[in-house]
Length: 148
Image 1 (cartoon, rainbow, N blue to C red):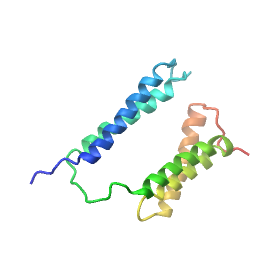
Image 2 (cartoon, helix red, strand yellow):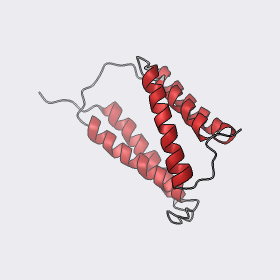
Image 3 (spheres, rainbow, N blue to C red):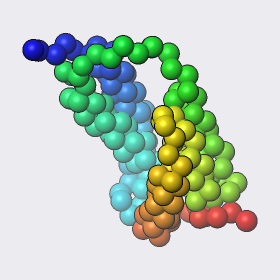
């Protein structure tokens, strides 16, 4: 039996891809720099590229996924994921990379049912350590791990 195309999920993936293209176009107007001395356009272009890649992978994954009978508007995931991004942005300069990452992961993990606190804490700690190693020590980005 052939599966039908899940147009809602394909449409969401295409919107993500369009947003990624928009970020790439806007970021390419700035100087790119290099990996050692990143210019102001480097980060937006890389983030846009990752969004575009995710969109392509999502389209490939959901192209023939089975349709599910779910409500179009599910407020819990949308609100908790948005709250996670806002918390990260608000805490990064004020509290540091580690508290901002912890808040982001914990809030985003509330979007999933059932909530798994142990997995959320383990993921938050792992991403915090990885973030400090990669962004602060590896790339030398001038952000504090903890802001006292």
